[in-house]
Length: 224
Image (cartoon, rainbow, N blue to C red; front, top):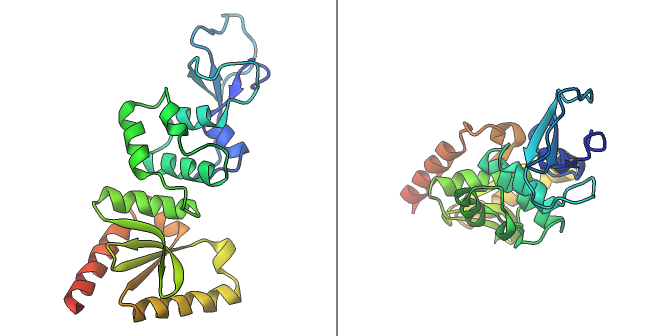
C-alpha cells in the first residue's frame, strides 16, 4: 500500500512492523503523505482500510518514515498510556533517542508535555508503562526498577507498595513461579506490600490497580 500510493508507512503500522508494543494489531494501514497530495477522482488504487496522515514532517523518498516521526503521528491514534508505552519501548530498544520527543511536530504541545513527564525507558514492558502512567496520573510517587529485599522490582509506589507485572513469557516457568514467591517474601520482610498484575488486569484503564494500591497504602500506614 505504501508503494502503491508513494507514501510512507507510519503511526501504529510502522510501530507494529518494528515490534513495538500495541494492544491490538492495526486493522488499517497508516500512511503518511504530504499535505498537498490528493487522490484523483478516477484513481482506482485500493484505499479502503487506509488511514491517511497528512504532514510534511520527515517526508522523503524512503518507504518507511523515521521511527520518531511514526511515534509522533501515533499520538493521533492511541491513548496517552499507549503512546508512553510505545516511546518507552522504542528508547529501550535504541530505535530512537530519549530526546526524540523534543522534535515532535504533529503531537499537540500538551501531549508532548505529558510524554516528557511520564516516559521512562527503564520500563521493561508495556505492563510497567501502563501501570506507571495510571499511578502517576493519580498523584502517586512511582519509582521504576528499584531494589527491595535485594531484588529489582518493577515499580515501587510511595515507598510502601511493590507492583510486579507478570507477562506469560517470563513468569510461567517453574523456576519463575518459585522465584516470584521468594521475591515477594523478601519484600514483605522489608515492610512492603506486594501486588501482582497480569496483562489482562492492566489492559483496560478501568482495572482495579488504583483501588488496590490505595487499599494497600492504607493497610501499610495503619501497620506502621
